[in-house]
Amino acid sequence: MKQDIAALLASEDGFEALDTAARTRLDLMVGSVEEVVGVEHLIDALHNGTSHSGDGVLRCYVGFEPSGKAHIGWKVLALQLRRMLDAKANVMIFLADWHAWVNDKFNGDMESIKTTGVYMQETFRALLSHPPEGKGPGELQFKWASELMESSDYWARVLRCSKGATLAMVRKTFTIMGRDEASSDHDLSKFYYPAMQAADIFEMDIDIAIGGMDQRKAHMFMRDVATKYGWQKATCLHTSIISSLKASGSRMESFDHKMSKSDPVGALLLHDTPKQLRKKMKGAYISPEDPNSPVYELAEHIVFPENGVIHVTPNPKYGEPSTWTSLDEFRNAIMDGTLHPFDAKMGVADGLAKGLEGLAAHFEAHPETLDRVTALTNG
Image (tube, rainbow, N blue to C red; front, side):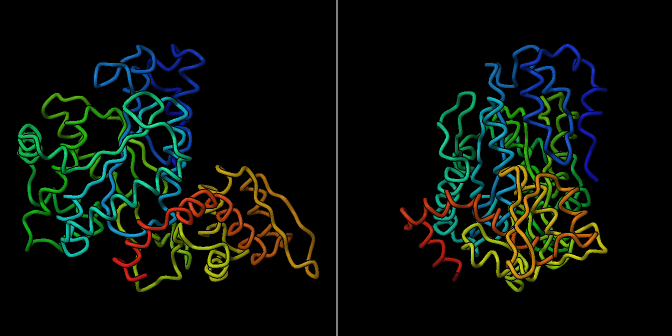
């Protein structure tokens, strides 16, 4: 259930002292997420013009394992990162190459992991409309985990994060790797993964850690470690995870970990053409009797935030075109029979396609990296 962000903010000490500009920035950063943990740091930083790095630049971070082609979950996160840029935060996309190696991506072939990381850079530049790059406010930067790991201080931090964490505690965080708790007893490196992820945040003086709800356990582990050592705690923002097209509540994918290849029609790729999106959406679960559907999730978390509207254009034999600007009205029209479910699905598919036009144009003009990843993933 989505957290009541407005009520949370109103209850926080210091919120009333924020001026209009600071409140606008805060709303951009947290107003659309599923959950905020530790918002008091953001409120204090905005009020006092401070940050964990000491230079007043709020730094947000999201970590990705380079592991395959981009799926629709990346779009949810890209929209949140665009809000962070608009709020004059510095946005870091952390290319977790060694984390992907630990997690057996591409069978541990680091060259393939690096190639996919370069593809991720190109993808996010296009999704974010090529923002200015650098370490300043409102700028985008990329950092490889392998750069951070060159420091002995980093590995000292990893050991400190590991100290006192029991194997049972770490097993409970394995879902951050897309694994169950019993999957990795044969591989010690995987038990260091949560400590590495926490150390990443501390070493880079991150103010805001962003991830899907699937990353919550990792972020809570990080905050527990910070409490233990008296280290600075990053605010954590958690975004929604889109369900599989076949049923609501059955997760399509996390942001880091690729969807099941055994069910390719249950997930949408960012490189799907408008025709492919429509074809996949034909099979999406939606019922006039059920208020929950992945179609509604796509509308709520992607199409409405990006386009502000859903245009439905049915076959003229079956109805007139219509325009929808509210999720509740859109859903109610389907449930009361005003809008046919098929036409609604096609409207959402077309809205998704519109938001992917810039990405498609980029890779049409510069296909080399995508071609290499296509070869690595066999499709």
